[in-house]
Image 1 (cartoon, rainbow, N blue to C red):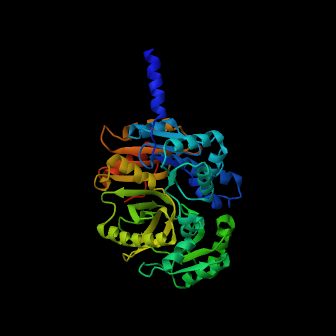
Image 2: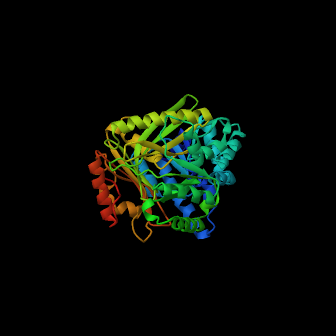
Image 3: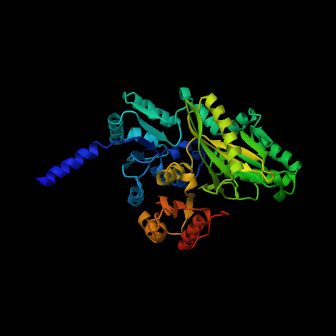
Amino acid sequence: MVQAKSSLFFIIKKMNKKFKNIVIANDTEAFESIINTINDRSKKAVKINKEHFLSSRFLFWEGDNKIVITPFPVEQPILSQAKSIGYKNIENWYPSKIGISLSDAIIKDSVLFDKLKKIIKNNPGIILSSYCYTKKLANLINVLKKENLKFHVDQLPKDKLEWLVGYLGSKVGFRLEMNKLKEIPKPKSFISESKAGIVKSAIWFYKQNKSCVVKAYSGEGGWGVLIIHKNVIFSETDLRKKLRKIFSKDAIWDTGPYVVEEFIYSSDGDENSPSLEVFIDDKGSEITYMCDQIVDPSGAFLGILMGKECLRADTIEKMSKIGNIIGNQYSRLGYRGFFDIDFIISKDGILYPIETNVRRTGGTHVFDLTKKLFGKDWANKTVALSKDLFCYGDKVLLAKEVLNKMSEIIFPIKGKKKGVVVVAVNSHEPYFSFVIFAPNKLDVLDINKKLTSIWNDGTLDVQ
C-alpha cells in the first residue's frame, strides 16, 4: 500500500512540474533555402544530418526547467550528463518523422502537437525559444495561437516582419545597412547582381593589388564565402577561369545578389575574429556576451573562446560601441530577438564588423551553459573553449563510448569545475561537439591537448 501511494505521489509530482521554456531546435530549417540548392541527394542528406546532429546543443540553452524539441532523440548519455551538471528538470521531445523543417514536423505529429498544447496550457506565459524566426516557425506560432494558448516568443520581429530576418541575415542586407551608418568602419565593397558582376568586381580588386572575398546572398558556417588571395592569381584570365570553375561546382552561387569586398587580413595578435551577441525587445537592445571565434583558413566557423583573458579591454570597448549602434539600427527596423555580429581586427588595429547572423548561433549554448555553471560573474571565473565539429576517427561511436573514452577529462575533473562537456554526438559520422572549461586559458588549452591526444587527432588552431 505504501508502494502504491509512493507511485501515485511520483505521478502527481511529475504532472505538476513547471517549465519556463520550450526550446525548438529548428537550426536546419533556418537554412532550408540554401540546403535546397544542393542537387546531389547524398550530399544534401549529409548536410541535413550534420545540422540535425548539432541540435542536441540546445539542451544547454536557457538554464533549467525546459522542454527541448529536437529533430531526433538526444542520446541518453548526453541527457544524463546534462542532468548531472545541474539541469534537473529538462525533457527531450521529438517528432516521429522529420525532414528539413522541425516546425512542420511538430504540426504534423498529432501526438507531439497535443503534448505541446497541454504543456503550454499548464504553463501559461511559457517562453517559446527558437534558433531562428522562419516562415515555418511563424506558421507553428499561428497554429498554436488559434488554440487560445498564452505563450511568449523571444524570436519574433515586430509586426511579424519575416522578410526582415532574411534581409538582415544576408550578406547584401547587412552591407546595405552598414553603408547607412557613417560612424562604423567598413571595407570597400560592391554589390553584384550576377556572376558576371562578381568577376568584374574581383578583377577591380586584382588591379588594385588587393585580395577580396565573395559572399553569396545567404550562407552558413563559411558556406557561400569565397576568399580570393591576391598572391594566387596570375592574371585576369586566370581569375576568370578559377571563378567559373568554383561557380560550376556549387549551386549556392546560382542565386544573387552577391557582395564582393576587400579581404581584411587579421592582426597577428591573440584576437582574430571577435563576435558578440545582442538581444532586442521592445525596451531596446542589450549586448549579452562577447567572445573570440575560431575559424579555419577558409573562414568556416569551428568554435569559440570566451571568458577571462580572451579579449582585451580596448577591443571590448570598440565592440560595445559598434554593437550598440547596430543593435539600435536593427531595433528601429523592427527586429526583435537575438542576433550576433562577427568582426575582424585588421593588421593596423581597425575593428570591422563583417556580418550579422540574425538568429541564435554556435555560441548560444556555450554562453548559456557557462552562465548555468558559473553564475552571472562567469567572465571573471572561467574560460570556455568550444568546437562544433571534432573528428575523432573513422568509425562512428555511440555517445556512451565517446564519453567513456574521455572519462578522465569529463567535467567536473576530480570534483573541480573544469573539464569537457560533450554537447552533441553525430550518429552518422565520426564527429562530436564539446565545450571545455578551466580557470584560465592555459589550462583550457592543456585539456584540449589531452582531448586531442586521446583521439590521436590534431589540435585546435588556438594561440
